Image 1 (cartoon, rainbow, N blue to C red):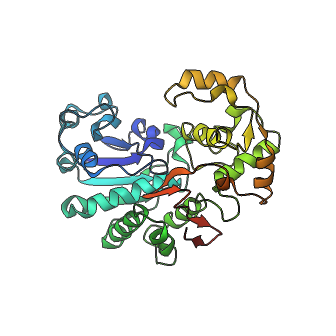
Image 2 (tube, rainbow, N blue to C red; image 1 turned 60 degrees about the vertical axis):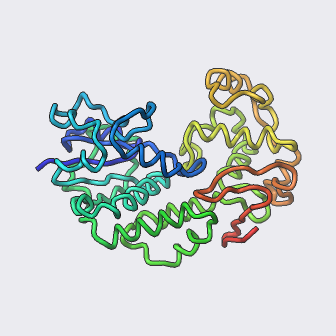
Image 3 (cartoon, helix red, strand yellow; image 1 turned 90 degrees about the vertical axis):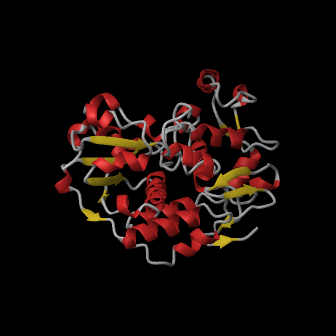
Length: 326
């Protein structure tokens, strides 16, 4: 029986675990930035043509590890590639981005019932990112269910809610039965907390960054490691952008990162060097925002995405911890 494992970028160790004939990783970052255009997704799952690096599903697998028969199919469309496998297992851990990738894939497979009939969902209670290949449990030791209409429909409805133009559908989901995907509700709650706060205009991770700086965690690089200091939603690439958003506005909440001002986000070496030489502190506004006495958005532009919602000063949904319209 040929087994295919689908996982996130956190599941790299699965590629060396020997648990399947092939492992495909998905590296979408749905917690950050706008939703991918439909045409780009069609190309991503389609036949290999002129897609750039990282823009085709086959770009995220160490093909040298798989058999010639498996490698020979890597330029096919994703659905055609799946035809030779008897079982397709979904390994996504509790991380919010992992759960978003899971519902994204369930929505995708909802339109391909023949392939969906092969799906099996593993309930991963551990952090895939920190697991070595020899630490990953055998499949029989990881609870699993065959994917049925309940899982597919929950995934489809949840994904459509997350990509909606407002967070309201996602908030409404929290009162629905999501038991088919038991790791989804905590992930959605964590994501809702990243919507700007009612009094502060900042999300939970941004507020946590202010707390850490106030608590003498002043080296910028110390703050860019997700999970190390209780900031686990965003990646090591995204965390610096949050820090710079707090430090480089018209009225900053953080001081000390002036060396990185104006640098392109693609200039990783220059920004790293600037971070190495910097030390952060709270400004007066930062202290007042942390004390819930001021609203960051009153003094600074807001321009970021939450799922399909474009958050701006004129479209600033709030979390209180109930959803509040602009």
